[in-house]
Image (cartoon, rainbow, N blue to C red; front, side, top):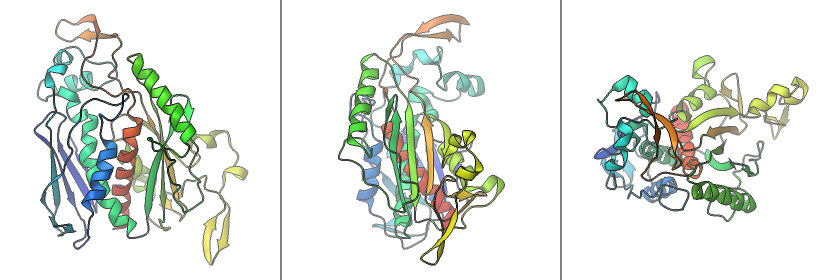
Length: 354
């Protein structure tokens, strides 16, 4: 198994949903950088559950315990190591899943590959809780990037049949969120999304969605062709977030019905610098940043743990059966995915730039 991401700035996570703790180790951070831990906590709070009817009722403190790599608020240059104690685990809720796998969850494939050698309580290391240390690492990197003029923001573009406005793909400004409980650009869209999520929760079901992310202030020239392209490394990081099932950059799959005459991004000189009039490429050409904002979107699947009866199998008796899931689960994971996307984007950009 690989739990490490990055080359220059390297993150390694360990632990599981119901283990004693979840830990993170970050290597390659520059000594002397001052980190605002309160700002880190703010991003971790956005990832947390237990705040609405459509999120899991599990509530953890999610307070980072710094083991090394920081003196006060200043990075020392040694590996930054932090741990998060799991205090609110209820492993008993998952006993039946040890022999009856949840449809579209990792229970069955984990059984095939690892047998009984791993604890799948709460989803084990397949759990969305593993995004907590990822968000810590990304929140640290985000502050370092901000000092270098790089901004990162994501918002919910879609939940079910409710859609938000898209980011301006050309502007180097990050559009502010609307005055809403959800990270959206349109408050009206946010209201529709909440209604959609609450409706799914009321029926014991779940709903998926889409998250759009924008990176501004990134100069041309970062990334490499072929397998180290910016699209490649961002995609690699995004698929480390549980529930991500697809990704597109710029116009993405919209180019399938387009023509080159309208899809190409024309070059012009503005204020003595090369720029593009449009940004259908999503700020990346040939795998390398072109100076325009990097824009991409990820598809988030509906949470597979739902309360409706589902068809499954008993792995001990090898018979068909019906499964009714208990425990605490999100009716919609999309709002909690937003800070995860921002964090992993920051980690990738720091790895490319530092």
